Image 1 (cartoon, rainbow, N blue to C red):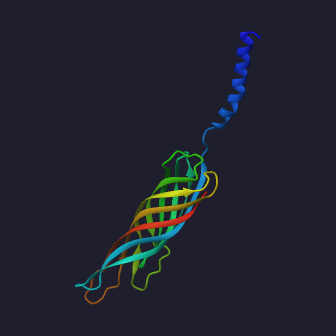
Image 2: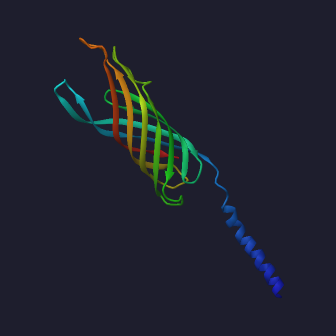
Length: 198
């Protein structure tokens, strides 16, 4: 067999063997993604009982949220987040724009770390005020860090830790010589959540 035939045979073998490798490197196509989580939020509250006494109390409340978006890149998802936060004196529904970013290159690992960022406005649509009160929501921002446990192509278990800063306002009924009674609230909470993603 001459060198020309050996060269053609080698080229043909390389093409045949290389084709499946090239076929596996198809361009990434955006897909729908969802993360739904439930948990508790922890924080402290400072408030006045009367003009002379100020109290600080620890609070634990329930929180839930769902992120729905598009996986634009293997490591980046963009979408929207809708949640429910049950504070002691308010039931707020944050509606946010959200990002989810994997810190490691996606692969076949069953444990992956991701970061999250949600920002938007918390609405008091589901909150019921007593007579004379009016509660309104406000701006919210929530950065976080989490773990996905499970195979990348399947549904994953999520464990996340995030900080949430939620603003709110309340008008209260006037008493005695009051001409105006307004309360500005800022809820600072650490949230621990468990959930699923797919």
